Length: 225
Image (cartoon, rainbow, N blue to C red; front, side):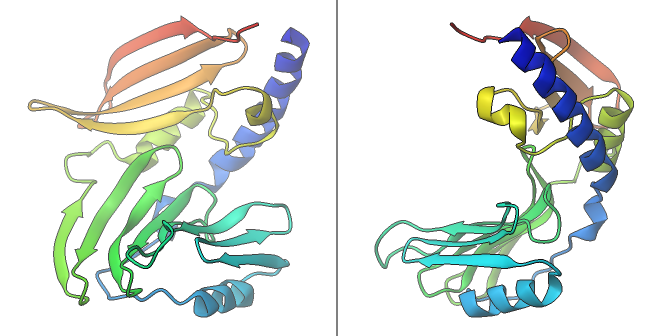
């Protein structure tokens, strides 16, 4: 098991360095415009903008587009029945920064916003009525002067892995998680990541205003028998 961990660690570190260079939060943009779910249109647009082969899986309860390597570019699902619409993620432009969308049963947009695969919402999120009228806007970057770009830069400088899935995920449950938290007095980030060399799970709390480290803790991996 230890040998497997060492081998997987090397692979993850390689993958992590590659992904870290490609994270650009400004690349994904949305606005408050009305949208309607149209599977054929989504597939055509992605196919037009992709230089590689893509595959569509369209079922009554799911709509998925994957690339030739098996990566999910679009992953929408819905509960069986006509009362619910599709909901899910669009990672067709960036594997780590995507767009969450939820649709009503009439295929009109209900909610949309930018979401980071590591576990946090970004920018403005929009909510609409079933008729397509804008109901509310919530800015999830408000109060986070130490923004996502600075968090990613901190991770890169401190060798915190920023990889999605990969070889090790198949054998081991640990991966980097980044979350936003708000209290009555302070906003902060929590970075929770695996240190494979030490075989420790590291948790860091960062002030969302100025980037100061508020707390750091470690606990051993739980591997089991």
